[in-house]
Amino acid sequence: MAAEVELYNTAYANHAAEVYRQSRIETYGQDFGQTSWVTTEESNQIPRDLGLAPSSYVLEIGCGSGQYALHLADTTGCRIVGIDINDAGIRSAGQLAAARENSAQVCFKHCDASKPLPFNDAVFDAAFSNDAFCHVPQRHALLRELFRVLKPGGKLLFSDALVLAGMVTSDELATRSSLGRYTFSAPGNNDRVVEQAGFRLLECKRHHPQFSPYCKPLARNPRKQKRSVDPDRGTKNLRRSAGISLVCPHAQR
Image 1 (cartoon, rainbow, N blue to C red):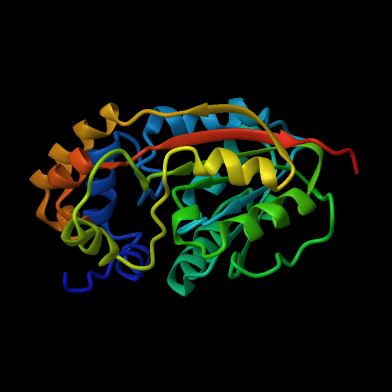
Image 2 (cartoon, rainbow, N blue to C red):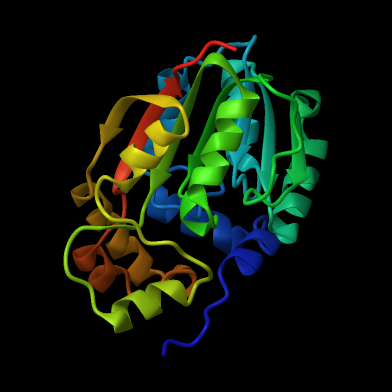
């Protein structure tokens, strides 16, 4: 059994440290406070796919350090709420927001996304999540909650880095799971649960080869590598970016 590896508390608590900032820049090319497998190109595509505008009210599930949410508020003018279960992440997000001129546009809440969301019905224009759904038990329940809090016609975009692309050993699963609680999905499962929650699937991109370039900077940087687990081996066996699903509700509320 793989030994437990601390990732998120360390990454978020040390978010402002220069070594972490440089590590993110080396790995991703741009610093959004990332801990996911979403590329910088995909991060830049999110506001376009969601159609974000200054009038948009947006929910991010698994906001982490909050840096990407603040970036979206800066670049699109939208209002955004970020939720995360990690205390260190929410503390870091609050500190970043307090130092920014756009702090009134952004709000961060400690929240367990596996439970009913603390928002009224039909309040958000869009919602998104970068590689956080794999940590949430009962994904179908979260999707139903997101359907509830989105306005009619609102869009949801999320990525799942743990859709299995082939045969994987129990040791490989244990190594990946040493970072925390994970749910591994079968191909097509996200499409099914998204539609069962009431959404109409607009698009589902499945691609993983572009994630292999991330493995080299991860391996070169020993501090960064402590925040990952066997990246070269893992990329061969797990589809790190299994699907980015852009969906919108069927029903009009």
